Amino acid sequence: MGCNIHGHRGARGLRPESTLPAFEVALDLMVDTLELDLHLTADDQVIIWHDEALWAEKGAFTTGTPIELPAPMRSLSVEQIKGFRADQNPDPGRFDQQTTAPTQLAGDNFGLITLPELFAFVDVYASSEQKSKEQRSNARNVHFNIETKRVVAHPEYIGDDFDGESVGTFERVLLEAIDSADLVDRCIVQSFDFRSLHAISRIADDIRLSALSEYVPTVEEMVAVGASIWSPYYPLVTAENLDAAHQRGLEVLPWTVNTKPEMEALVELGVDGFITDRPDIGVQFG
Image (tube, rainbow, N blue to C red):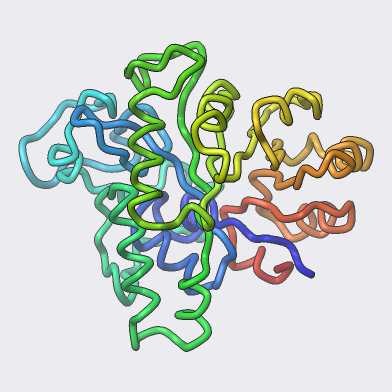
């Protein structure tokens, strides 16, 4: 059995991140999982975007009322955010293969979307005659790895009623979107903020949870918050901590693995999959 390949922010190395063309390219490559980040808008909707704000280096407002950048996500309604076109490459040295070439279904729509809109797009893709039988079949089964972008030191980034123990508006709206789409069995919720995972585990024990980390937490710490997946920064993975995680039944899915040699080394160690900006390379290991 091959590795589970997660397209990071869709396919950040190939199209501007978190946009429909990026997700479409990842689906075209037949990734196992679409990885994405969520923020909470001013009108309490979940929007797909990694950063706590909209930045000029990633795009500009091209329709609607111009808004000064940077603009915090929580300060903007979905309608306002829809005026932002996220078509800029903030790091062309790192993402030298990223283009704004249109895709078959999304075209050059580089606006931001809500989580329900992504779910709907994947449904459209799965029935589109413009895609191959294999691509449509994969889309009908593709999973979603959804990150709650809470930051312990900056509660204002989400700015809801979260008390550190019970779910806040952010988690409630996220879970409602997953339930409404009947996708509980195809979704993972991941977070660097283990409090968010623990709160979700208390009210939704049927959804898989992933502990993101930039350090090596104890296996006990991850299991205690309900995680069944450990997702570390990839250089942290060793044979020893991989074995310790596996011994407790945790899958190990490192991020962000972007070169073939890195992928080969991790596959040789025995990871269960990885998150990558370059799914065009990663799917070779799937």
